Image (tube, rainbow, N blue to C red; front, side, top):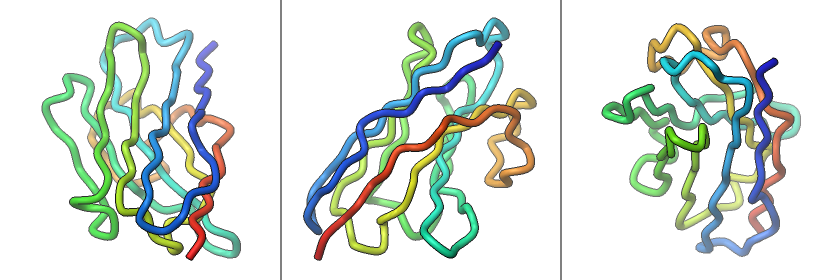
Length: 124
């Protein structure tokens, strides 16, 4: 049974930084992508970043490019999202997810497993 557990969320002032972690378990098949998504109140869940199974390819939403960095530790089945220069509009619940088809996709429908989410709140 695949489980994803996010951690690292919290309250931070604008301009600050946070590092989110996503620990995966039950991932016996090694070819999968890690994605990060977020959902603000009253809004749809949106793509933030994805890293390919090899770590060689990453993609970012335009809104976070040059501020956020996705990475992974394959040995630990863990993905990270380093978030710098945070803005109030980054406030949301952040979810990690796994795409077993490894398409480096920004589409939520491609993702097979999801974590429970971690709250990120950025104050102005």
